[in-house]
Length: 202
Image (cartoon, rainbow, N blue to C red):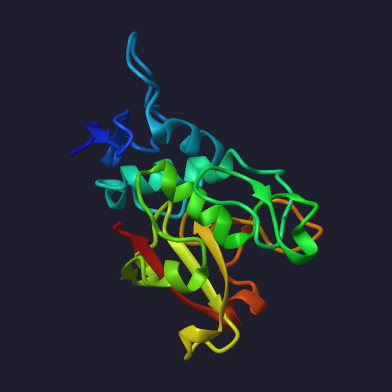
């Protein structure tokens, strides 16, 4: 299975080459672009995260998630804006985000997955129901990671991040911050509020 190349067709009609399986993040044999072909979506992710906590064989079929996470990673440094962001990119928010051009957590998730051709909505309640629930040990790049004030009650979900692997996510944390990478696994606050992961299917 090593080095299998998939061609991901997106809703917009574009195509992205993705290298999967054993060659995905193998530093000894990196995936290199060939003349006339786009660079594999996985290449930049593996270069920046050589310690990815996702077995390479779990990445087979993950091309949409890889597109989504790379879209989110390109937004690092964008200001947090309450109510900001949509499928097209950062926007001015509402209420205390009205003068800030950026993303809130769900706006970033919507934008990331729109790049992968999925409509998941712009609110955490919609996004929680936009795909398949994924066991924690099977989280892979692009999956949505949700946090709730009461992990037994989805109605209390208040935050979403986009998984880099089983330990880290890119997210828009709160007013005064920017889109950034954080390690959520092992963090007492995040562990206490973790309610589950969803892989969008829209």
